[in-house]
Amino acid sequence: MPTRRHVLKKSLLLTAAGLFSTTRIVSLANATEEKSSQLQPPPDLFDSQALDIDFWVKPRTLDLIRPASKERSTLLYWKDGEVIDSAYQELCHLLRDVNGKQTVAMDPKLLETLWATQAYVQRFGMTRPLEILSGYRTPESNRHLIEQGVPAARRSLHMDGKAADIRIPQLHEEVLGELISSFRQGGVGFYYRATANGGWIHTDTGLQRSWKG
Image 1 (cartoon, helix red, strand yellow):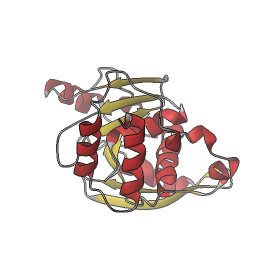
Image 2 (cartoon, helix red, strand yellow):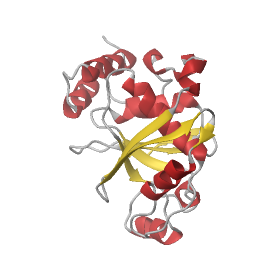
Image 3 (cartoon, helix red, strand yellow):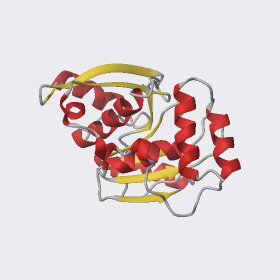
């Protein structure tokens, strides 16, 4: 019987070829094997530790969309080893607290993770923008989410500008999360949802850890 790892690899390749929708990928993975209670190492296809130095020194452009505000930006924010301040400020604005209408300086390490994730999957033909479901949160916004029963930690790193909830259309959230985990840059939360858009992944620049919510 095909292993879970083989299913995830096949899902990626078929998605890159435009042959599978998100729903089909989820169905295929579930039909082959139930998601285990413990997180597994990322598939070999997603071992970011195998990337060479050329990947990390090239200019960095982020293509982001914010569904909550219907904003989209494609920004070259890093080149020749330096952050481009105007682009960085615009990215901070895009990752602002949409409800609280406040902006803070986002952790550059978080932007690096977002960029590396997007740049990695683009190598397989997936060029859709990365969706930002949540970036910075004011303490008030974070508390409101908790009161509504939405998964949110009381000391969430979202409140420090060090976390984002993201997804990439047509890419299974488990594959996305395992890729981010392989960068070893912080915490990764897997949020599976049986909806048309699927779930999402929480990524932050805190301690290395993982969980399912």
